[in-house]
Length: 387
Image (cartoon, rainbow, N blue to C red; front, top):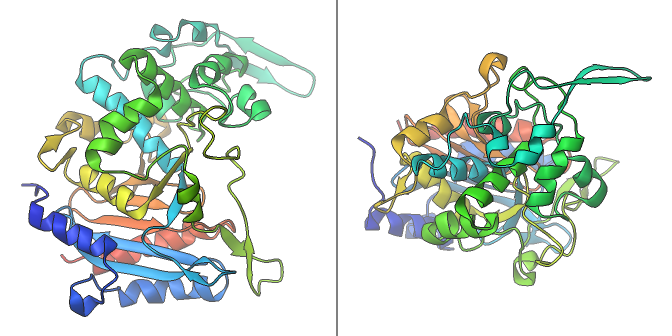
């Protein structure tokens, strides 16, 4: 029987995520194994700062590691109130939003997207292509909501409009309709290719079906009720001041080189000229990601409120890529018995539905070493998580 988050467990969670007291005073201890696993990455200037949380579905934090710096130049240690660009972790909310509408009987995963966006009936598929010509033909089957959420639609990673104007410089409506200029790179369902365009089409469907702007849907259905007070497409100046620096090794490999979030348009707080990027636009904190992780670990329920049905959660936990057999669901990675998602700079939420482990890895790494570090963290977390 799955455990519900009690008020006692909530107290433990808040203590574990906000207290600056020592472990002797009740703060969760650091895992020596996680510290050791990350040491080489820190020594070789691959990861400037790391937050690692290993908790269970009741909200109890068993281990909490804060290693290194959020700001190397200013020697500011990484802190739990640091803000992170969570990038592709944003995709989790597109999948969950659609499943919420499925629960309400308003959409089906196998609905053609043209049911909601008729203009996409003009999609064509690349049949042949070389340097001198491209031959297009009509799709053999409709592109469905399941296809766009599982990266099997045939859509390229970004729309041509996004490639010209920027990832977040046009409304979801324009981005979704502009995808017809693509064209589809293969027949729907035939191949898997990771990208953001399908998530933006899904988010536009959420807007159409709910009659609510996508950002408001997320705010009202997820962020506000879950207490995710710092998760946003538009971080304030105060939040940006707490943004963990993005670093990788310098060319000489003897220090850090600072990077930036080039994927999004500055200023990030601009709500007039920037729009939600459903594939990778959110910023968040360790606390907020933990809250969402607890929702996933408790089968779609938290604090006595059910957000997603058991059937909906089953869909999010299982492979959805058809004959391609890629370990991916509907905006969720599937990895070693866990599900969740990672982001471009290495942030990761992974939940084991059998053991109840919630593992959170928060970094901002630009050097390409984040995936191996993340994998080692998850391996270590699984080993030290109480059986």
